Length: 479
Ligand SMILES: NC(=O)NCCC[C@H](N)C(=O)O
Image (cartoon, rainbow, N blue to C red; front, side, top):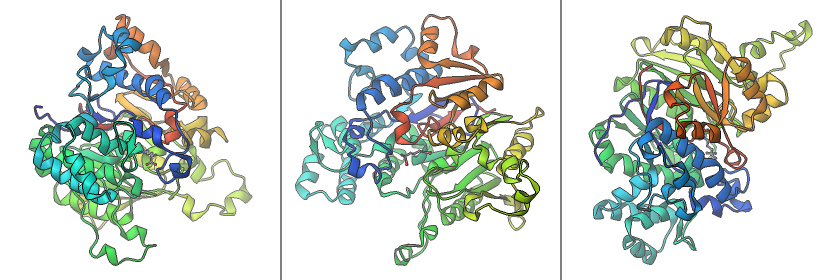
């Protein structure tokens, strides 16, 4: 495969190329006793999550990013007679897009190389404690079968060799493109370790990323981390892509969260400045809580002057603007429930700037980094009404993917958030209807403006991530 340009310098520039992974059979192997360890909130129904939910996402992305692969073919693709081979990386009918790029497909390609295959087989077998015999058997599998085993943990859909990596659909977390550099993750949770290993091999070995090899950043561990006591989490270097947001060519946000440690933020800042990747970095420290996990679970950008966020972290809430005098005087805020923000500039690291609230930071980005003259607007999860605000944040109301300025993809179940978008002048359209309109030429992706594309979500949301998490942009147009 020919190498292609990589560049991401915003959250909302027209999306041109991204990495995805559609739900594999490993998701259908999650058992109740392991669901929490494997970071799933429930047992999902495999067929529904694929055919009735995720496949719509694939079709939508293809229509926006690589229409030649899909235009005029919807009926054939969805015809049960064709066994959904369009969505299966090992099939000769697979969509094989170099714009909507399936990781399993890339993995199979690098496994054709004997040297890479033996290194990766040995590494996976080492972390998964496989016997020497299994290791030998894996060496002799066909590349697509081996890629599938590495991801699902199961051979030929029957023999379970090791656990699945059911969170691999959340490609955002496994690495992040910052301008023309690729920052690799260091997962905080055991359940995501194999994902990081597979991605490291893909980025370093696939021809697609050939000219970017020197731009891959691997964060080093803190010295002698293996001597640290078990409770010194913040000294370990863990970083997941959901905590990184490239908001302008010069400015990146790093979340410090349940998943990304302060030490990782520290090393990432030093490295990104040393390599001249950006000039400004804001550290957004959020409460360490399963509800929030990464910063992209509490806010994402919709367009230059619009953000969606959880109202609990708004100015109004933090400054208690609605409280009476007694409430204002009694400081009932719990320390570990608040956000703190500090911003470093490369040219003056010793004089960081502090932001009192998340909204202050986001307004500053819109106005000063993105030169927005219009008023900066916020849409709040659940329309900022309790209990819908927290209920809908839990099901990823704040975790939207912008396909271009003002065109976002999100879940159907977050009714109040959707109403807030409508109130702000947005159109909403169900993905199924939109695809039909594309197919009949009633509308083209170029025509769509200020729109929330509504996706089915009953099963997907149980995996606790939205479409921001289910995307790793490789190329966006500049805003
Ligand atoms: N960026 C994100 O917020 N990703 C969501 C990851 C969900 C996955 N079940 C996890 O807990 O890691």
